[in-house]
Image (cartoon, rainbow, N blue to C red; front, side, top):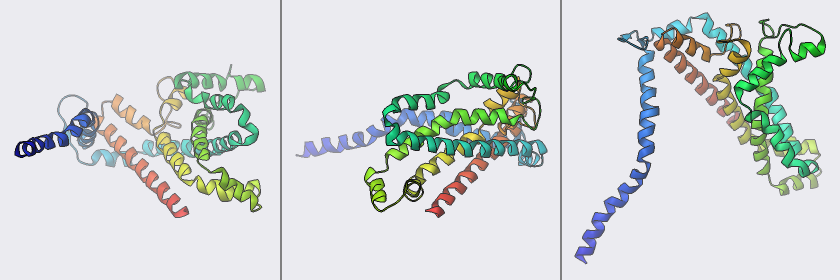
Length: 294
């Protein structure tokens, strides 16, 4: 008995250590490729650093210079415009498409509708941007050819955001359609039938049953769209310029890439952390808004 107890005492620490050995590769990769770079970027944001040579500590001067830099606020307003003007149509179209596809009348052809609606999300961003650049071209663009006009969509600062917003709507609708469709499948058919038995019309069932039950899904979609919108970079720069979009339509991420290209890594890291704070505040505001609405 004594020998068995000693064996059990020896094996017990091994059993306790074994789970940590399984997650050790993840912990090492998390520390090496996430936590350490995050800490290092905070340090660099407080420095004047070109990416080589010595660092010079400047404190919060990088943040102060960015917050008093008009171009940063202009790019932030551009990103907000892309976010708002893209999100509203995407959420409306995606939700209505999900409701229509979920209905009994369209159930027969779901295997056809779902892939077609989701297809734009699968297309490569670069290829999609080139297509939209051709569609909105001034001289040989498809829209101008059909209308017989020469509207300078890609050169007029008042119209340059339109091709980007159209592409964002076209690409993102299919993704959020799938999310909304998944949320609608969680609503019990008995709940819908009960509402109809009580005399509720289709519109009343939508506003008083479906939408309230879907509030957690709406919160998820709004938050994920906001995070993606504030990290927007590829679409404006591919559609509107050969290298980087003009300042009048440049997204906020251009502040990071421009400073990296100019050798101001401290400013680039500071701009990145300003973006992180903005996304966090927007996420918390959306979570609070949905929490108060429940």
